[in-house]
Image (cartoon, rainbow, N blue to C red; front, side):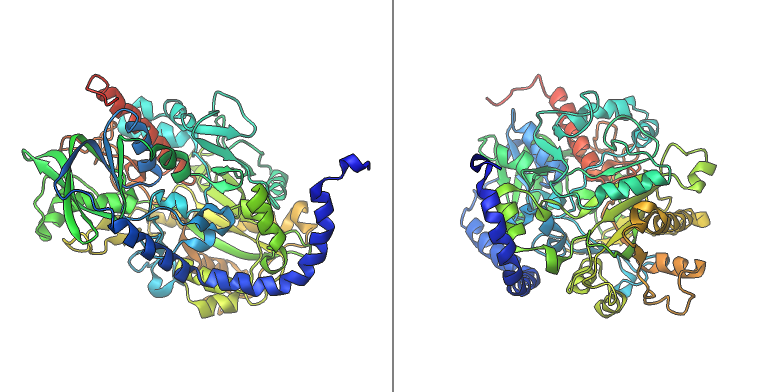
Length: 627
């Protein structure tokens, strides 16, 4: 190699190689200390931020805007960006700006579950799933802050399946919600970096979509699926039936993008956009019986009102939206009357609740050093790689590959081309503090998780989440009281469908995952083998027998945080997303989905916001526009 070819990086590599073995024994305890201190870090940061924000007192007199948007999450951020180009917009959000740590993709899985960034919902006790959760209650994450759940999720960008949206068109009677109808709105904000073409992908948009620098064993997982007959397909591209691929994310130079950095941050300097943080919306205001004209909200100890001359838009998410609607008199009439809330529109708000439930197959141990072992691989060098280049392990949120396919049950129903199962692959080993973090995130008993992971800690490994993509089970959300600060009642009815179709599909998915991870050449050469410790609650059953897996599914099943459907098109809102029975009120978030897509819901939520914004701009285009 010539002297001219020697780069500073090459000169530094030997130094890094020498330093890491000496620094790592000191660095790991510091890393654990930081991870365990997130509660204090977030609490201190947001306490100081709230005090600072309180000093910027807005006028006590009600202000009037063209549009008021409630909720600054994946939908609200886009709507605020699009409408504030031409109209006066007020955006109300209960939380604050993201914490700097939330921009690091590899840290995301440790951030959620804290009250400063998460609404920390819990379901009612479940009868047929999540049985190893404390009180059998599933823990439901919902982001709190500018950017919403997009600040704390695993960032997986998957649109769904062609038949998901063709089904929406059938359910709503509106062909504009078909797959061909919604593709332009998926593309509208996309800046795609990957294989594909302009027919199904957007380029140059607000939101960068790409694979992270580090994909780990993602391609191994895809090749293993090919051994079982599943193709490697673009899961966000041309229509497909079944398929596997590595995962792409809203990441730019290794930094989390969606939705705060992509949509809100660029719009904040606009004079047409006013953002009120720490604003807890209590109810929608109506005049003339059913005309929405403003909202009432609490902020820094004061109850305030704001008026909208055109429309109020609720984008508070699957849990927040039905709560605000019902508190405002829009919902099941009998339920509202029982709480003393005057009924404005008797529609089934809160019904039709759906969610993807996942079975965590943790852990598959590996004989080869192919996974991420935190104590070994998350080094000072890795941090510097991310800080200066946006590369390395920290550029990945953790999930490396995924796949969707149809169970024998779906095929028997004539739906072989509409997958009902999904796998998520994580090439990360259990580390020393894994039981503590897993228990906190999923409301599990730490002593049981510690016992279950005891033979996996520190060994190379991976895990697979098996998900029922098209659940038949339906639940509901209700108000817990008439106060805006009362907790809502969440009943997902996991695995409660007649005929146990959801459960049978999951069982088939578990068997397929075991086959892929233990019997394909791709993983046999790594010595992949599932955890040899019986799951707590299932120790009385023969290990790996059918009864054991049935017990495992019912006990180690948790939410994937993909709820939707609680203000569905066709029953609560029209295909134009206008709330039935009232005027000047729309809903734009995952709650309007009549049936949730087979994959993660953030991408479809952003599409809904894009399409909804387009419909609003079309309706009001002849009105006076702010210059």
